[in-house]
Amino acid sequence: MCNLRNLVKPNYYKVVLVLRRDGGMYMQQIKLMVPGPTPLPPEVIEELAKPMIHHRGYEFTKITLEVIELLKQFFYIIDQDVLIIPSSGRGAMEAAIVNSFSRNDKVLAVSNGYFGEVFARIGESYGLNIVNAKFGWEETIDFSIVEKFLEGENDIKGILYTHCETSSGIENDLRTIGNLAKKYDKLLLVDTVSSFGCMPINVDKLNIDIAVSASQKGLMSPTGISIVTISKKAWQVIEHSDLPKYYFDFKHMKGYMDKGQTHVSTPVPLVRALNASLKLIYKEGLENVFNRHKTLANYIRDEAIKLGYSLYPNSLFMNRANSLSAFLLPPQIKSDTYVNYALKNYNTLFSKGLGKTSSYVLRVGHMGWFHEKDAIHMVEVLKDTKQDLSF
Figure 1 (tube, rainbow, N blue to C red):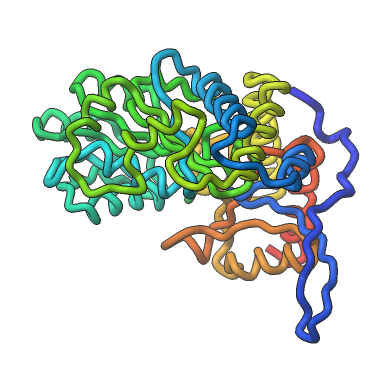
Figure 2 (cartoon, rainbow, N blue to C red; figure 1 turned 90 degrees about the horizontal axis):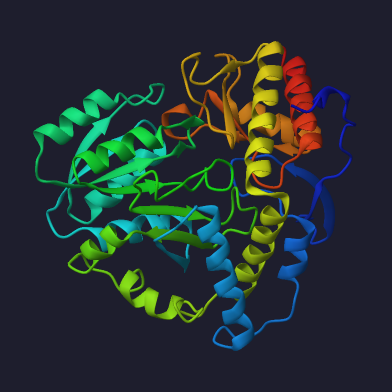
């Protein structure tokens, strides 16, 4: 593990132009440290600035096919397909549901946070019979309870599951849910939006039938591209799905994807940017990327605890994601107050909690284009803000 204490404090920031009330502009330097979107590497920014090319032309289809092959490597895919969709990650979640199920299908939604509950609500919006294995936001998933649902509800068609719960920073176990899906022959749909690129996800070995992710977090690209992996088992189900779909029709998409195209007018700069970021990850090496995320996550949490912060959830028996950390603020300090203070005084943007935790949880992102100097900067801001706010 690298000795982060001996590294030099960073002296660079993301520069943005802000419009003044009088119509003028000024430059404000902001260090973006939220759980997505994440800062962009210089190579990605350069790619975004290139002249436009045609989304059906040879040059671009070659780029798209490169992106697909790199994504297959990063998901450790042996025998699955990958689609890229012009949409946010939530679009991919919806696409996975409408292609996998039919009207009135019974689906088990396993959740312990905001985004797990979102996955379930998307299914409910399409009239699916959602059975909720719903755990508290501060709880780990009890797989004995999940298995009881699978034993008692023989007509369950599939499982909705979240790998990294971005509302709390909890990493949910993929191996155990994958084994249960295989044991009971259920289709497994997994949200990997805030974990892909930060932690290893072997979709074949983990029995994941459909994994969904997005470009703006661990993949350190702009928002706007979502990613879907699809197993042979999933394709068999997709063939008979009768939920309404047009834009998100996987069968329609695949015909274009095989040619290196998307089924709609593709956001060319975003795909080119994603290609550049994937090549950077490939150059660093997947295992090195995962180790970097793990090392920096552990450093930030250890140092924050030394400073007097409490992790959220406040438990030692919790697997925490390498991509973000969550801290419990004291009652006298509201999340809005903390976030606004750090931004105003230290030009560093953190995130408050989500949903019911929005007023008392602080979330900090350490994913994607995030290195040792960024971790040191984060810890210093955590230290100084805590001192300034006197808690």
